[in-house]
Length: 151
Image (cartoon, rainbow, N blue to C red; front, side, top):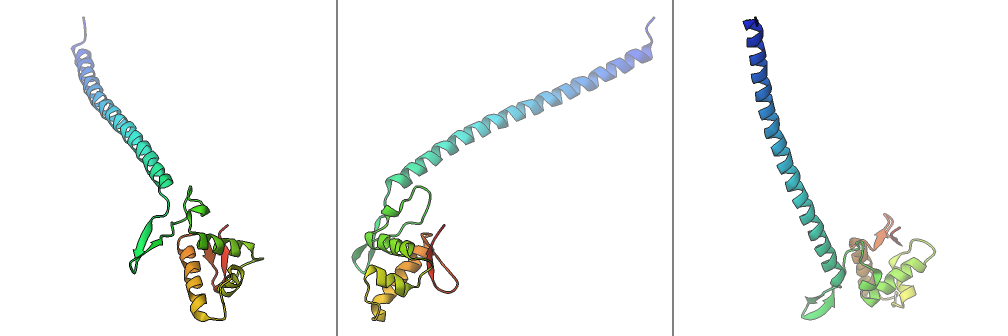
């Protein structure tokens, strides 16, 4: 004859395992749902990243307005943004800094690009352009005030 105590233990254990199975099935369903949501999020992120990259590649520097005159904005240096997207005078400044034997002062850049360095009023706009190129990541300014290309 079967022992009633053993049957009771088996029945209790079976009930515990049924509860555990239900909990695990619920957790598995939650995990699968979250994985599906992550897959959707990943596809959306890839699509948006591609769209943003296309937009950045298709837009060149956009003219802005200063004092009623159209001026060219200087883009930040980023992957995919080439030096030729800069206005011509900024390209000349970068070329002058690159051509120098080492870090250069604004006065030396002015000599290379043909600015009258004896007149401070003509040198300051050049210095402003150099600083703008530093701010946008195209050049680097050393603590002593000299400029160099970013490496």
